[in-house]
Image (cartoon, rainbow, N blue to C red; front, side, top):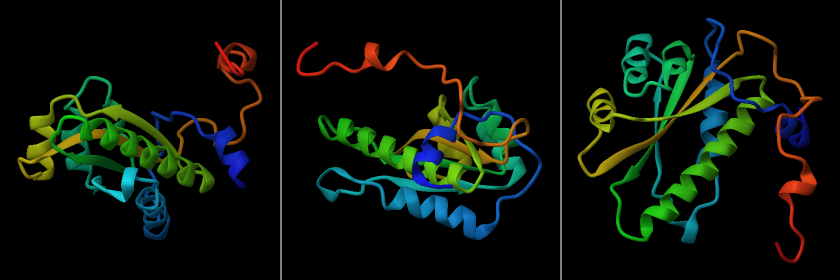
Length: 170
């Protein structure tokens, strides 16, 4: 799939087939996140990869909207240093860029993804053994879609282009 097709095919997937992701594909997804831009090249994000079913089920309990984590083939938890005044906004922006790059890399491979909040950070910290100076920011669940495969969407559920894009002024 080329980049434009991956962008048009990517959608939130929350129902996965019971199929493992090949190690080389998972590494490619993670490498896409590692290569994501970072403000002042600070690179303060880390990724914790979970593929163990019991661990995924525990992580899914951290937030009501993270049920799909339990059935994913792999979930990446984006981890940031605990908030420091203005730096936290930059860290969150960087985490968002890494998230999208991983999701696009996955879509390119036909692998679905769905993000979620980490909710109860103490639970996530315990399950993943995170140090106290680190906070779990987001989950990204990956797996092969249980329903329709990823392909460019013909009917997009988004506001019209003319309503979203403002040229020069509001």
